[in-house]
Image 1 (spheres, rainbow, N blue to C red):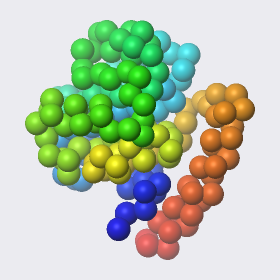
Image 2 (cartoon, helix red, strand yellow):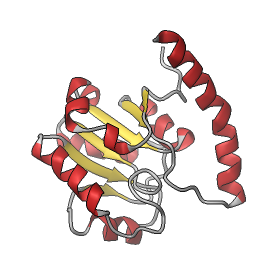
Image 3 (cartoon, rainbow, N blue to C red):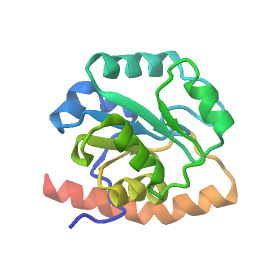
Length: 169
């Protein structure tokens, strides 16, 4: 049985999850968290490097969507030029918007991966929804008490996961 809070894979950034790698995992669709996964909270729009990565996925036939706990204003602005599936105020780890993505893409759960930067929202939601959980470190974390506390709680889980992963290799 999978550990609810262990990602299925952990990489230094999203660019490691290219089309070739995703296809090697049998994935046809990738659902992405936005803030601190794809861009910082301060970046209202996709960066040029991110746009190139997204285009390469699309050209390879990988369907991409966005899911965020941030506001509709934030998500709509970010997605304006792309017009991908996008869900704001998703209340992750709840799986309602993940289920909408599954229906919209027509993909089976095992053909979908979700990538994010947080264990207690992104990884938990992916596992609860039955899709592959991909994790990356945050690009630049917020320094509020809430985020520092959450990262402090995630730290031992990530350390345990990385130890287990290194023992399996």
